[in-house]
Image 1 (cartoon, rainbow, N blue to C red):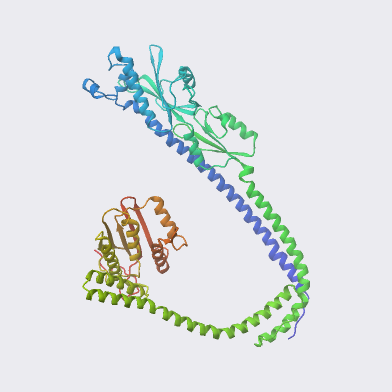
Image 2 (cartoon, rainbow, N blue to C red):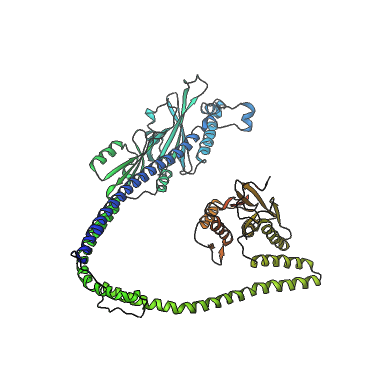
Length: 619
């Protein structure tokens, strides 16, 4: 073999190729990819925090709206007792009559009015566990009269303190909307110090002209601040983020910065943003109550990790590029000379001489290449020799497989002998049970073709139910509505595991009898088989676990003793393997009502591998 030396040596080609094809494009590509990753991470983070702020706002709005509904109860609450109902007709105006004492005798008015108002405030406080206290204030001849109730304290310690927190001296008595009083403490009750948000609604005399109703009084509802705090915890924000819940006047209703709670803080937020460039504000839109959520992200913490990773990868990439470049220069010098010697020896391999061995000149790449080549030739030689042994072992494996088929047939034949013996002894029930079991075993060990007629599947299910009813005295009823079942072909063993699952997890835990219904429906070119039971059903969590199992690689659910739910997992996997991801099981369930399992497969006819498009009439 003649080897021509080039003017441009392999050394120059190799070094130039490493630089132009390997290092520079890698540096450029990685830089572009990393920048794209950083931008997408920043965009995703901003979106996540914006969504968190909006979600918290929506949750707070929903919470306050529920209390807004409660605050309207004075218009609907019925104070009447049987004795009062005989003398008074109560309507939307009954609350006003109680306030003004119009339904009481003058001698007992104060006692009876306090009793009814305490009952009303007690009722309001008992609606929700987060309600600390309830109050109702009204003016009577220039004097403020108040009713107060709480089950957290034995008595009201300071009504003036309560009036101060409510700013009742400047109270807007014309407002028809829900009023939110900034966060304060409930220390106007003795030994009762909760951080509290108070919601208030004015009550009007609706007998006047529309739009000109006269003010009667105001209902106040004290809510634990912890109910708001729970909503922020559910958002799972990082401890480094500063969170603020502001009302329409800029007062801070809640914050993880405790010292600002209850204070007017909107101006301070803007000032803090200007003074700290590391804080990035996320602000939700104001809701119907004028409430908004502020979240300040700390850029150094939120984006610090991704920036550190970016810098680390760039440093590593540049370092690796320098190492590769230096290594290529050294390696090219060592490769150039030995490679010609290797090429001259390759002709022997091309002639089929696998006994040739290349001389190993060192432990570098060329030396390793020579060693691996020698190993390859020896491995190829051994493979040729071993192929004969592999064929012999395969024959032995086939013989073992044939032997293993003897044992199920032996069991089937033994059951048949027991059945005939029971019939000869006059025990027909045991004979029928053994016959049903034998047919199921015969069906299981029979030919494993992919599809069988639907009537065979239903027949196996009927025998399974028969055996169960022999044990449980007719507890289970099997109904089926399957048209043309002898003409429809389905995968083997897709019904019995589903029916067994319906019995074990649906009907068996249920007291009394139960029903399993099998129904087929044609859906365009597909066949939908539904297995329904009226058992105990499943909760949403249990149903979610079943779907997680169906989409996982696990064979079933592993408990302390055994694997469970293997049957439905196997059925779903086999259907998807045969027909694709568009087919399989769909499970719906209602706790205490029952479970429905829909099996979706392509519709196929007997003696035909082609899909049907309307040849069978399913009614």
